[in-house]
Image (cartoon, rainbow, N blue to C red; front, side, top):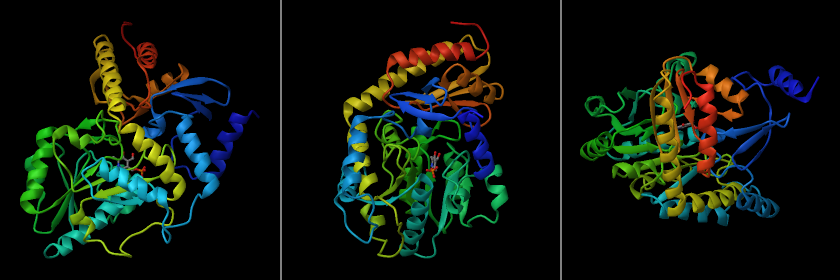
Length: 398
Ligand code: PLP
């Protein structure tokens, strides 16, 4: 039995089968490429689901891991360590926020946001605990985040869900307004829905939500777990609509591939939270925090963000050109380096064809090919990707 077959069989025998796996086994990564155990190279347009923003083997990330691992990896939040505080300062200085709560994933960041909103809502008059979320949203798979993720196949096996979550229609302000009651404390929204199919909220919608929150004294929570930290072409996607949230959740690329999440809040929200209200054993240990400093420093540089916008527009233009002679493509949409190619049929076979041709793509819903390449890709990588995609999708060649 070859080593690939052995991995597949061990996975099937010993790992709880929650994932649909690729048929190949990834061995290592270099730059914007992954290599499988047979030595085959793949151009990676998934980046660990929007995680590996700086690609694979970034020297600064490797140096931060090595240096900090030798000093101290973990000590728990009973004790102060410098890297966590420096990271918090960097996040605050580069966003709307005044304070940061750290955790280990996107779902955990949203759990913290939900808990903080409820505590804040109760402090600010009466029994306010309801949260409004939107159709198409994905906020994670823990019980709180799941209640705000209105997808039947994710929710059905786990009912009863967390009560107090009301679903309104995305990009429909009237629907959001109608969902507000005297029990509402917050609205949670993805400025660009990721798993929902790379669907940007309109600027008017986000501005309208901000006004609604001001009027009714609600918290606006932006979930930037997928679209944040440069992916949309600005450091935070909310910037593109000219609004500021009260709470923002981030994770995915934050610590360069190590698990880390964060919930960024205003002073008003932070002042509702006291010692013992929430916590985490692992959160923002010195190792992950040191690596996250590298990521935040790099992705917040204006030249880095300009690169994301420039290569992103180049990719978008190439996709639109390709779509013109591919009747199977019904829509191309995206911002920065997050793009969706909506097909008229199931996208899964085209992901598999991509693998065969040495390109990695993922899906968002059954008919959408989702592209989330490392933010450091160059035009040449985009050209190579488009050439492969042209052969993968049926229709005339360019
Ligand atoms: N929020 C958004 C917008 C996401 O895209 C995801 C994951 O895809 C999550 C939350 C959950 O993050 P995690 O898988 O790290 O728990």
